[in-house]
Image 1 (cartoon, one colour):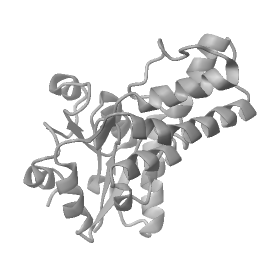
Image 2 (cartoon, one colour; image 1 turned 30 degrees about the horizontal axis):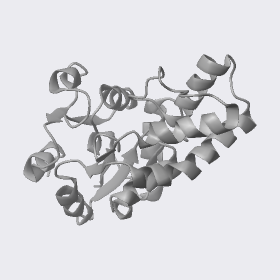
Image 3 (cartoon, rainbow, N blue to C red; image 1 turned 90 degrees about the vertical axis):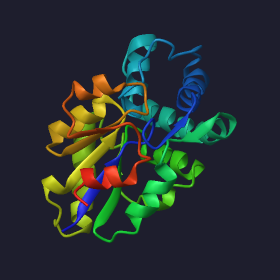
Image 4 (cartoon, rainbow, N blue to C red; image 1 turned 30 degrees about the vertical axis):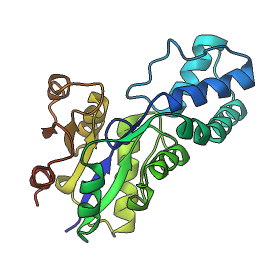
Length: 227
């Protein structure tokens, strides 16, 4: 029986200071002449598409047309690689040790659960040399609703594995209470890691299946997923 692990990216696998915000700021500034367009727009737990739409409603006073939304997304993706290279980048504790161990097990499928657009997700992973571990997932380009993008990641994994993944064998790993909420709504197990902006108590308030300080204790992680 297969086990599916869906990892959040920002704050869980890696951190790249302000690259996302700066690339989005530049995209909106170029396309609409807005200065510092996202200073009052929250990012935590959000999807890229949701942030684009929130900025438009807040500062333009109207929703983006379908063509405008595509223009913003395309320009953001063009600008992001430079911002990733310019800014401090770090992998979260234990990530470089844990992922090879998981990838070596044939019964484990590694996937993603992230609010990033799919292309942006893989840009960030590639910056840290981790893109080779992940070939599927649920992304911010699938849905603005995190629970729905989790379901999309599960659906893709099941389609590739002939449906042989039980809900009890699916785990979402994330640093944000929004990850835990999304996993619960999707009906799967959740593992909170205290490597982002949320401390242990904030994560525990959302009743995750497990909470770890970080991903450095490989044996503890394997126990959480039943290995």
